[in-house]
Length: 341
Image 1 (spheres, rainbow, N blue to C red):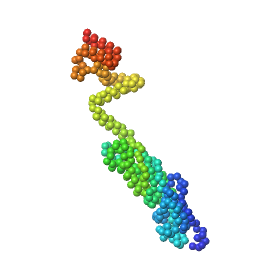
Image 2 (image 1 turned 180 degrees about the vertical axis):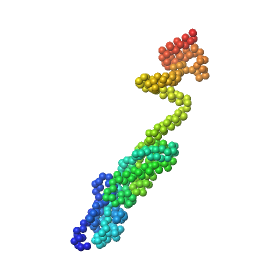
Image 3 (image 1 turned 30 degrees about the vertical axis):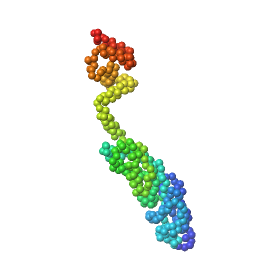
Image 4 (image 1 turned 135 degrees about the vertical axis):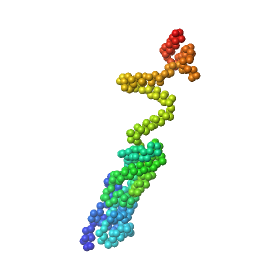
């Protein structure tokens, strides 16, 4: 190589990355028609790592700091580049910078329900959403497994791969769990812990460190939620028993009357016309039966109590303010009519 051609060669004296692009995780320093000068300066800022790559192979890795590039600081590249022969070698190294900052506030979710095996329901489909954060933990592994020799590798590109990895890992983690879905759904922190351990291992295989992971919401598809609601309702009815369910039904009927009055057709408007109104009226009458009648001793049937005793109890209810004067007078008149004939 003549002295003239050597002088015309272009050399890099300083290699650095200012991270001007938003969301860029890996950036290759422009090397076209350039070679690195022996004694050049490599500036690696905090939250950065520089990687020297020769023909697709990682040769050296430099952490934060200012490094003087000589044959003593680049022992691997010395043999590859023949720096002692003033760049007579036709080979040149590529220099890649990697951002090791934590990528915070990243959202994850399940656009489609994920099918998992559950202890209570056998097979169910669930949706979940939350937040996570990550960083490049092993630039060498990240380069060989994901980013490769591309000039720029962005956060969006890696997260496209991470989302698929997260969904597969979540399905495996929840499916293999000994904890029922309902228990985990009620405790989202527990659910996040169950997934995070397996997810950190999956990320680590690509040189990515999982920093934080949380579950913000968990839900079932509408049709499964409706089936679950029916099952819960059936369980409540079974636990209440027949007697309590009768009172519960009467309460529901009584509660529906004010709403029915607002509808066109009044009470009958709840159902399909007058027939529904009559049925509700009968249920209401049964539910309210005994509410206005004088209380009876448990051991004495209503029909065997004397009219005198009923009048006395009726007067007692009036004195205690449990019935109105009008109720007292009308009921008293009916009882006296039966007594006198």
